[in-house]
Image (tube, rainbow, N blue to C red; front, side):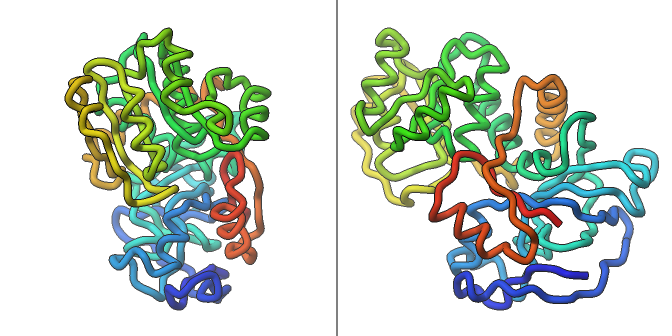
Length: 323
C-alpha cells in the first residue's frame, strides 16, 4: 500500500511516498480502507523535529475517514463509513496511508449526508472544541471568545458555542479578507484586529461585559490580549501555540477579574469524555448546526505541499488529503 512516511524529522524533504505492507487486523482493531486524512499543525511540528516523542520513520496523520474492511463487528460492519482520531501518526503509523488498523474506541460512524472529506477534517478540532468548552463550564447564555476564525479550533469552537446557545460566539482574524469571508459564511461576531484591538472588539460586542471564557489555540500576543477581554470570574483555556509558545501576561487581568487560566490536551482526556463529546457532536453535524469548512484538498502524494499550504498559506478552513 502507498503511504506518506516521515523518513526523518528534518522538514518537508523528510516526507516520502513509500510502499508498505497492508496492516493485519488484531484484537480490538478495525481495518479501514482510508478515503481521506486531515492535515493538522501537529504533523508539521513532528516533521520539523519539534515533537521528540514521535520517532521516525513514521507514517503521519492523526485523523481521517475511511470504510470498514474487516474487524468492526456489529458496531462497525463492513462497508460502514467512519471517522477517527487518536495516537495515530504520533506514537504509531497514521492516516496518510491507503489502509490503517484503528482501535474500535477511536471510531465514530459518519452521519448520512456528511462526505468523507469533511468528516476527515472534523475529529481533532471539534472534539477539542467540545471537551474544552465542557471543562470550562460552558452553558447556554455564556459568551465565548475563540480567536482565529480561519483556524480549525477557533472555527470549531465558534460554531459549536453558537449551536449550543452561546449569548455571543466571538472570534477574530488579523486578515481583512478573512473577516469578509467569515461574514459571508455567517460569522457575524468576528473582530478584525487589523483595525481594532481584540479586547476593544470583545467589549464592543458584549456591551462592556467581556467574555465568560476564552478557548485559545493561538498563544503568543493573542493569549495576552484575550486574557484582558475576560468578564468577571472568566477563564482562559490554552491548548495551542499557532502564533508562539511564549506569551507575556498582565497578572492584574487575573487578579482584578478574579479569572483563571487552565490548559487542555485532547489525548489526555478520559475515554468517557470522548464518548460524551461524540454524542453531542454527531447530532449537530447531522443537522447542519456545525459544518466543517474545507479550504483545500490535495492527493496523498502531495502531502508535503498540503502541510506547506496549511502552515504558510494559513487558509480559512481545513486542509485534507484525498486517498
